[in-house]
Length: 68
Image 1: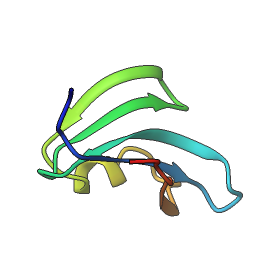
Image 2: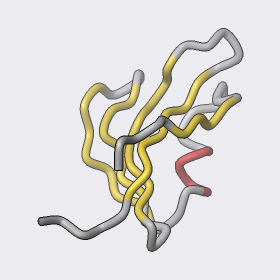
Image 3: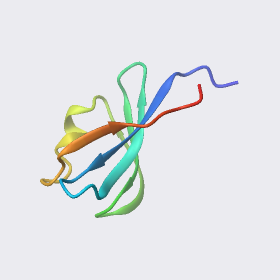
Image 4: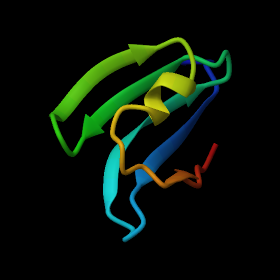
C-alpha cells in the first residue's frame, strides 16, 4: 500500500476553465499530470510556487475532495 499522503488540485482561469491538474504531496513536492497548453504531462516540481507561474492566466488554485 502506498502510504504517501497527497491532495489533488487543479488550476483555473477567471472563467472557471481548468488549465492544469495534478497532485500535491505531503512533503511539498508537486506533480502536474495535465496542462491545457501541453496535454498529459508528468512534470515534477519541488514546491507549488513554480506551478502557479506555468501560465499567465491562472486565477484559482482549487483542492479537490478526496476519499482518503
